[in-house]
Length: 433
Image (cartoon, rainbow, N blue to C red):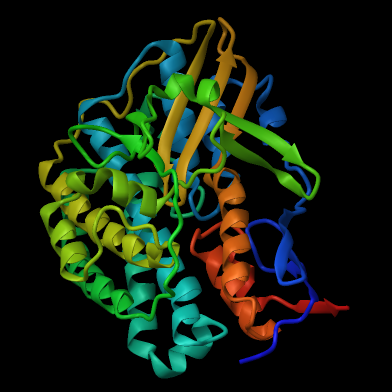
């Protein structure tokens, strides 16, 4: 076992190939972790400022450009916020289609993370390309699962990246029942593949590491919440979406251009698949519950490294739910409902693959956006990631620098942050004194 040094500084200057730019800095003195910083130094993108002065109808298309992996989440949060401001609610087949579109995004995003970004950590590879040499069937299965999710997004959203068919009040065009039924066969294959994936990732070697998290997610009594619901936590939080700013607060920290969110008076919290699984297990489909129980994943899981199992369970759920929605689909008479603007404030919050995504807009009588607030899941998890890293470094102080770097990268990727693409290609600099 390597002898612990008195002082070590681990500095990762650039996390390349990411949805965003960031770095990692850890300083250890006298075997104590004295500083941990996940630095997000990507230049500000000013989307909230860009939205001011634009029509309320433009928000779904503009905000979709924030992310190429989960644009549907931005479109859905923006649309529901505008509809909330205007006093209308999208129901029936149009709401079903939104949920179906979101299932496509969950499948493609979760498959990308599970197979291409996170699985290599557990199997000892630097990348999915290296992993493909020994696990070609699994890599191919991951790509095929992602393709099924993309097909759903393409049919309903118009294209898989930055969909163009979503609008406030519904869609510009809705698919026919025959078009959706054509996806039934690939979804049946995907559901079987997802079940196999749950078993596969559950066989990985997971570090013995648990934390006392406050999990936060949307919650509905009648379905696994994706599009709406109340914000709940395992520590008694139970509020309407409109009360988000009364309980959650964002703050600037010197080392990051991303805002850090926390719960007022309580601190860091965790959003995403593990939070949803723990808070809404009873709302998963029977098949998804069966798969989780078969591999020993049960509500109350506090090991962040097992989040990869929760993601696999959600892939299975999204395939199962998509098949149910397609069977129930009856095309609406019109692809959208009319939404007339009024001077008001609207709130929207949906479950992006990485966790809750909150939007708040103030609009004028004419529908001009006067104020915009967007709180993405990665900024909500950032403080929690740093707290995990502090515990990870403390737990594995005696590891070599390379081993410790590997463990830190894996801990970051547990959250599937938008910087996760790069963390397989970290360049670590070590300063010792």
